[in-house]
Amino acid sequence: MFAQLKNYRAKLPLIGDMLFSILVFPFGFTFLEKLFLLVENPNDPGLILWPSALYGTLALVHFFRAFRLRGRDGSAFAAHLVYSAVFALCVVAIVTLGFGEATQIVLEGVFWGVMIAERVRAIVRNHRPWSVVLNVILILAFIAAAVASMVSIPLLLTTVAAAIFSFISIMIVIFSGIKLDVLKEIIRKTYAAEIVVGLLLLMVTFSYVLKYSDEAFTTFWDGLWYCFAVVTTIGFGDLAATTPSGGSSPSFSAYTASSWSL
Image (cartoon, one colour):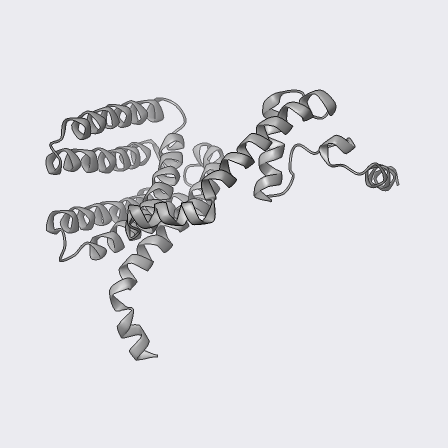
């Protein structure tokens, strides 16, 4: 067992980075559900757990990211250690000071400050015109998002951005070890491009079919959402077919209706 751990010791920071990046999702989206209650009751101990968990997870993400980059990029190693320490201090501030207006402003500033600092560091490292322009646009967008988040519902855009950028970072980590020519060969041999395009065409086509043949779908987007649920097998929620054209069985619908009437 210890021999196996020794063999995989170099990969532990990578595994930790991905694990805690993935954990941002449940904490982030659960925090969104609790956010409105938290604004009304900023000192509720049960609710304060969620922003603490979110910022604590962000601290661990940057901690593992720092050690994944140690020995390869000294400036990135130091930067992510600083980010980790700052997010950890945010957790301390939430626990000790509560979730008042001042704490919310600090949390907003820290998150968007880290995002802007990363883009500034990217400009310093890469002087290519397209990279500079892209990063400047992102910096302006982050500043606008920070201002909009502060004047509207606190931490709403921040939490959404944390989930989105964690997803992006996971994708970067997963695909960073795959060479582009190898990826192209995989796509060519598995016909992945043809399959994806075919599924998209089927989804769009049947979205129009559902719009005109099933009264449960009043718009094209309703049909597209239903088709997406079918293709990804995530299950039906707010929309479901009511006619055979949408895949509903008449006998099953009648049985369901009779069950509800009972």
